Length: 413
Image (cartoon, rainbow, N blue to C red; front, top):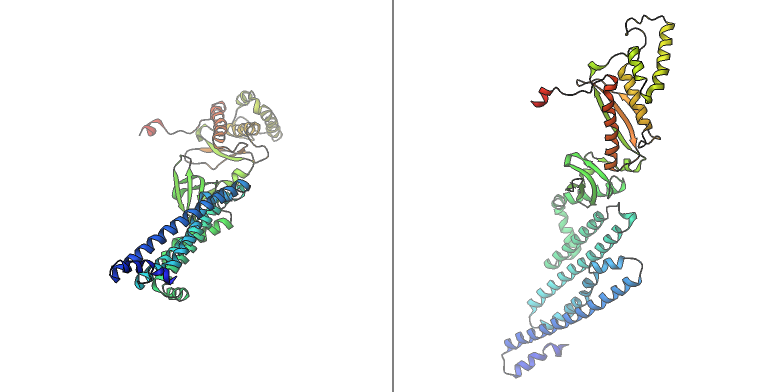
């Protein structure tokens, strides 16, 4: 090795060049030869590994090796041997230049650290893509875990590089940084919070990829498309993307619609507001008129018989409708809506069905329909709900009721 170190130097001396010039030319020629050898070795190994991974991917059933080729694991691994070759022979090239040799060696050592990080990074990305392609892992925050691993690897790698530059042993360098831990924690505060939040989100199964969530604070209303260490991406129904800090999922309140999607129906909860001045007792003529409505004819007949029997038994003076027991138009209307909803083909009969009267408001008395549609798809759900309330609002006049509406002069103002 020593003979080869000054092989060109001896020839340059014989040609009559000065000692300094011969040393520089000797270094330049050896450096050029080393670069050529390194590039050739790198090219050969890279092609070999590429063919190896391609053949392996064709023979195996798993697609992990496909993702390794996609993320160029073979290319990064191929750089290792040429780099080791350069580290071993750099002392030969710069044998006459101690300062340059020391600097180049440190640079190559730092480069080897970065290459190691890059190899691990490409492998972690391959695993991330592989797990994301699996159905059972689609609802897991795989991206968060991969980012945590890479942050740790980069931190170790950068600390190692600083230790190489300063010449301080790695463990001693880490100990020295202990005093600056508070600053480091402050710098990586969001990362640490995101990591903790992503673990809690995953362990508590709060959010999965594909979940429909509503987060009013951030204006998010759509499906989760990505869960990262620092952010959660939500594609809203208008196709915009909202980015939410991961730690906000555990710090603030949001709505996850997964429970509805996993259930047997989607809730309908909406009211028709009846004008209070239109509510009244039903006269005999009103009852006879409403008996023609098939949905509630049996109910009115049975109810009227019970009421008349009660009033006759107690000899109630019916000259005034307020005396005794009576049917009201709003009560019959409420029963009409309940019967209609119970018989609607799109309503899940195994879940709660209720038509109820809510507390009076300044606008009137709300008659609320509470039920669950069988079809949970948004567009179909909206159609079912609109169909029910189209019918309900159109039925109101038959009971001599009125739907509350702002006066025309107020609406124009």
